[in-house]
Length: 409
Image (cartoon, rainbow, N blue to C red; front, side, top):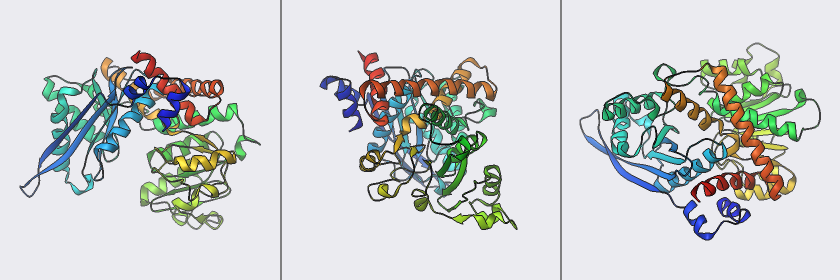
């Protein structure tokens, strides 16, 4: 629907719209794995290469039991728009295996990872298609995949994958990249449309406190904003005077959960806090709401109760179209996911550059380069929004589609 709306704004022909919506290549296969009990089990796998008009395909590989081809096709197209929007020379792709990685031993997981690479090796590479981690995959899996691809090619190929461990050719700043990019986008937005009062009075609630949620909390709190609530799948806490983010991160690392009593043991601050859940956090009185967990969190069922002035989508698709239709007339600004969380793929781009040159940068240089890309992307979207008199979500897709369409022409 968003692609159709953007195509209409840009006056694209029906032929071009059809081309933009059709993947260039779909790979479907099975990955056989010799299990620890001696049996062989086959897992369904996919790699969808959506569009490479702007450069090599780029997109993660996810290991999840509910993955399917339709999901992978949708995510591949999303990567096309995200890389275009970020102004980096990539197209869009995505891969997946239908498996619960937690059900596999380390040996089985390595066998599966290497088997996936063997299935797609002819179609990937540093100048063809550069995979990265996604849901259910991580730096260790990327290391296995890079090693397997290098064996197939007969020489080291560190630029074939991104998201690798730093000691194995990964990039400084890659872990912080998504959260940092979200901070930069929010900062640029507030510079353009400041909220009332001092920056230290701006309140923020963050749903999801994994890598992305923790890093954006750190950057926002370091720059003066007040994080009043955080939550994850196991619980959450709300403190009107502002949460001590470093202390909370330390507590979660030690205990595995958000717990106000463990965060502030024997302290009067614990009495100022109260518990909250992923659901209740979404309707708190706050200036900025950051869904950084899962998709479809704000729907037509709870959108009417949202009190935030700004929603920064750090998760993919956390606000449904039906919720958009309720929130936007209320005056809520929604900064869309492919802009807000684009720092991750920008960080991957700079890892790719470093791996190709075998020249690795300090974290400060990486973050400065990410910041420049994020600022440029935000300003291009803001210009498209003002030019076409459309919403932020329509503007990000109009900007993204326009670059791909021009390249295809």
